[in-house]
Image 1 (cartoon, protein in one colour):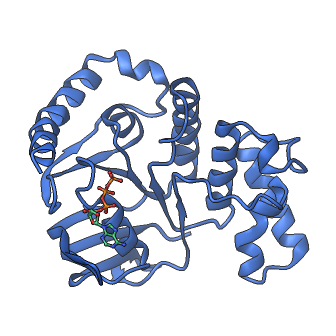
Image 2 (cartoon, rainbow, N blue to C red):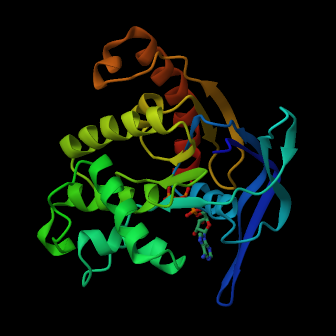
Length: 266
Ligand SMILES: Nc1ncnc2c1ncn2[C@@H]1O[C@H](COP(=O)(O)OP(=O)(O)OP(=O)(O)O)[C@@H](O)[C@H]1O
C-alpha cells in the first residue's frame, strides 16, 4: 500500500448559486496532510472546513489553487500521483435503510463491480474491525446511533482507502458513545497507518486523534495556525489527563476562541 501525502496549494473557493450572493468559503489555504498521519481541521462553524474536504476529495473543483498528491515510489523517490482510493465518512450516516449492515458495508465494492464473494469477505472483515460482528443481518433501524456510525466507518474502511476523510464523524453521537468511538478510531488509524484527514468541531477530538491540527479562521477560512500533537501512541482516553494534552488544548483553544468570536459577529 502506498502512503500518500496531500498538499493544498493556495486553495480558494467561492460558492455561487442562483438566488444568493457569492460566498467566498475559503481563501488562499495552503497546508500539508502528511503521509500515514492523522491531520485534524478545526475552525468556527461555516469557515469552509467541509468545502475544503469536498475539494480534497475531488467532489468539487476549487476556484483557485491546486491539490497535489505525492507518494514514495519503489526506488524511494517522492513522486506526484493521484491515490487509487479515497473514502469519506460523513456525519449523516447515509445508510441505505432497506439494506442490511452487510449489504450497506459492501455497497461501495458493489458499485466498483467487485465480485460478490470478495465484497462479502471484505465487508465481514470491516464489520469485525468496528466490532459489529453478529449484526451483519440487522437493518439500520434496528441499530443504535453509535452502531450506525460504526457501519458508516466500516463502509469507509472496506474500500481499503489510501486516504480516509472523516467529516464530523461522531458529531451526531451522545458524549459517551463519542468517546468510545474516538478510542476505536484511534486504534484503527494506528494499525492501518493511513493518511487520515479529520474535520471536527471538537478540540479534544482533534488532539486525541491526530498528529497535526490545522486551525482555520472564521469565514473566509484561512489557516490561522498549525500545531503538531506529539502525544505518544497508542492513545487511550486517559491521555486526556496528560498535562501536555491540556497545554495543547489551551493553545488551540486560544487561537480558535478569537475566530469563533469573529464568526459570531458575522
Ligand atoms: N453548496 C453550497 N452552495 C452555496 N454555499 C455553500 C454551499 N456549501 C457551503 N456553502 C457556504 O460556504 C460556507 C462554508 O461552508 P462549509 O459547510 O464548508 O463550512 P464548515 O466549516 O464545514 O461549517 P460547519 O462547521 O458549520 O459544518 C458557508 O457560508 C456555507 O453557507
